[in-house]
Length: 388
Ligand SMILES: Cc1cc2nc3c(=O)[nH]c(=O)nc-3n(C[C@H](O)[C@H](O)[C@H](O)COP(=O)(O)OP(=O)(O)OC[C@H]3O[C@@H](n4cnc5c(N)ncnc54)[C@H](O)[C@@H]3O)c2cc1C
Image (cartoon, rainbow, N blue to C red):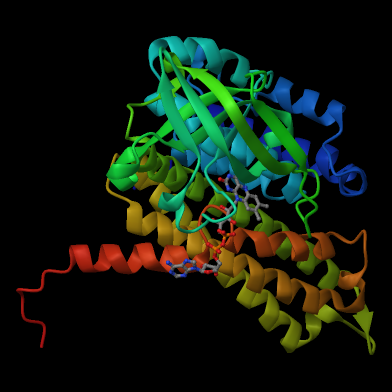
């Protein structure tokens, strides 16, 4: 594995870190209160190129490889996770499908605008009765002339309220199960598309999700992404890519929590000593540091494997599982170090505490990651060789 990053990506990483640590952090309370990202912050993010991380330069983006994207996502994870999620969803499931599967006409039509943040991407798979069991979706697409007519309701679509283009998964042939699902690029002004009210969530304030309702929504045939019937298989690949990004974002949050905890432990004095002098507190910090380093190793290793074109289904699931579970453990320990202060509104640890929980649910729950890991283990297992 080669982690000698080019100078250009390291310089870009430093600029992103400065932006999140100074600008985004300072308006985090406003984001929490208004449950939206202030327009001036979005404009600065546009100017920094943060909407084009997955989009190749010929379509106006920065187009880093997976390792480079993780470097940037790690910086985004340092700040308000609601802000981070807008970019995670856009640069992950929102654009990766178009980059990898779109035809030239689709790429030219969507990607330059998406790279500039003028069209924000979203991905709509989940439905009320189909979350983990994604293959059970009920949204239907029926061919009518050169169009498809979509009917159904998608739930919890991140970026739905601000999206310019949504990748919608729908059943085109019920008799074929997972091979009968197709992905459609649905634009925000499509007739028959309506956006539900913004979900009221426990955390991730600023990242808006909602239902997406399709009522006789006519989508031209040329908006099929990939081939008819390959939507589900492709969605799994797009989700796998998104999960690596999520692991990197979780890593950034853990790194930030470690820094905040060290700072607090050094400054806070109790019974005549700085907290940092107590072994109980030192051990909490050591535990946090171990979680950060294990997550870092898993995340960058799998990102490197993605860049080599290796088979990564199991490794992605392991990294996503570990990063999201470790994030919850780390934020709990950080809260322990902060004591009562950590439980107070306005203190970053309190916000991270609420935001951490969802990492174990979105882009496939921890249970689903374990299913993938076990399934792949048995596929790799050579039952014929004797081990005992
Ligand atoms: C903030 C937020 C943003 C989201 N954004 C999007 C988005 O942009 N696009 C989108 O399509 N969806 C989105 N989702 C939906 C998300 O993908 C689902 O919530 C997630 O996949 C879990 O599905 P579910 O909520 O229906 O839970 P369920 O599938 O009902 O699962 C409930 C529990 O049962 C377990 N379980 C279920 N089936 C199995 C099984 N076969 N084996 C073992 N355990 C199992 C799960 O692990 C979980 O613990 C979002 C959700 C949230 C909360």
